[in-house]
Length: 338
Image (cartoon, rainbow, N blue to C red; front, side):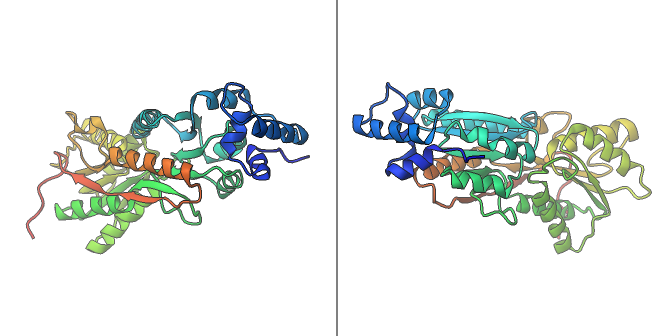
């Protein structure tokens, strides 16, 4: 089977940019007749044919940014996508969004995604495979992982919240408020657990630093129902936790509702509860959830800057970590005086 010819290969042979190759196939584009002739001649010889969609997009937009996302039903990821698309469009680029169920599906579709000739590829909600990143690199398409960073074994560009510090912060805040029998509900039970591993590692490191050992654990999947299941398990245990950290606000809400509705246990009277993300509903009654807040405006702003830099200089390295902060509401008590 012969290898498919790419726009990058033609651009390299003729010493022109990849966008110039794309514009050569658009009769409305402004390009030197001689350059157009040479590009079309070589493309014919090599059997290269750009997609119709790619030609149409290049006519109206200088850059197309492919955005690959998993599970846009997650409120945090939906917010990320809304902000990212708005900011990319405001900058004059065209975001082309592809939703995938997991990293494996993303890897299987990357060839088709690259056929749209994106100037960069953004990935969020999953950990891309090394082969996926390698293929993008071979095609001359820079990549950026959004809201997950420092992935072991992957030399990748990223812009992310500081999830490790966020987990450690949650542990410190529970301990500072007197909790000692502490449990956690992670997002490790789902496909492509995203930033859950970083949050959990930070949380366990924070407990260790305080000399406390986690006495209960539940692997959830970032859903409200996972929080409900965790509450049933924790609340029926011989020893109930007096402090609980949930890897996102949705699970914390499910935990809080079930603990109160089915077991008559309320936060902070019977236990203290901390979530993560600070989604809008976390501040609503009846939740008023204490949580670790991501600064998504800062994350998206840094991501857009990084994308623009990569488009201009694909070889540039982007490594940005945005701080998080703890927001105390009514599911935790006041700090215990030292």
